Length: 88
Ligand code: SF4
Image (tube, rainbow, N blue to C red; front, side, top):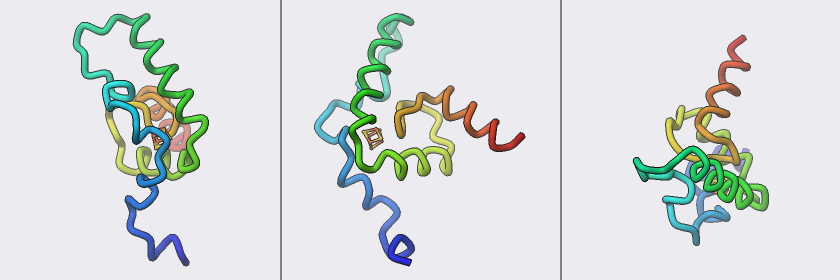
């Protein structure tokens, strides 16, 4: 019942990524190479592994079909695969 009373975004206040620049989680560099992207995503995912709201973050990203960035420790492609796995 408590979850129903909490604003949907309250979990964000406890996000481990708050002190980090958004570019670490979203890229936003058209010239980013595959190796650079992989390294950046792994760095972001490492932060997610220590995040106390990881489950809430991932649930939100899956529910809203977030198309870009690392959410809940997963890339957009990993979230897409997760959603496709649920549908089948
Ligand atoms: S799981 Fe990752 S992206 Fe989500 S709030 Fe936590 S640190 Fe940020």
